[in-house]
Image (cartoon, rainbow, N blue to C red; front, side):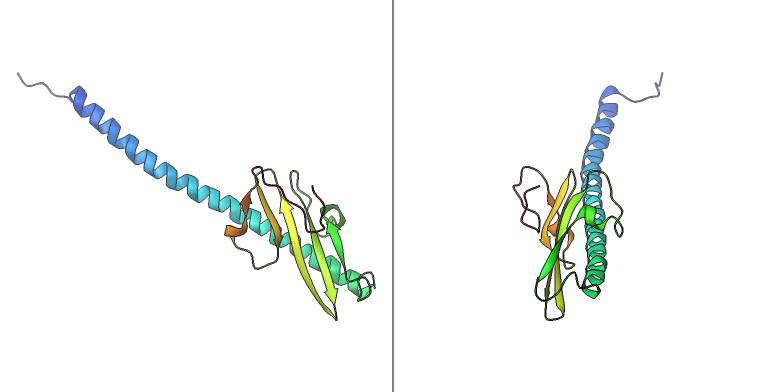
Amino acid sequence: MVKKGFTLIELLAVIVILAIIMLIAGQNIFGIMGEAEKGAFRTEFLSFLDSAQTAAQFDIMNGVINASNGGKCYEMSDLAEYFEQKDGYNGSVQVNYDNGNYTITGWFYNTKYMISSKDKTLTTDDVEDLGTTTYFNSCGVRP
């Protein structure tokens, strides 16, 4: 008489193989998700810098920023007209103005990531885990 079916050892071997595959695939998926989160955070920061640039251009045209004062610091609340305020996000941007040229550096964080003293050339490698890092914003104020 021939019995059809799998032995307990065969079933356990299949389960072990599937567990190993899931472990390897899971690590790759979580790594990709983490990089995607950092990329989205970077995009938010670039949008934040763009809004500060727009505000600074208006302030330069209206004489608020000029060669005598050298620049201005914008907190996130100052940019509400240009940047969508999101819960859990905070930051500031320092605009330095000299002889018709200006530079913009920013500081930005949420509950998970932070970017400190960067301009538009940043990459996702510049996005740091917030952790327990001690940091200051671009205006020199501890958040």
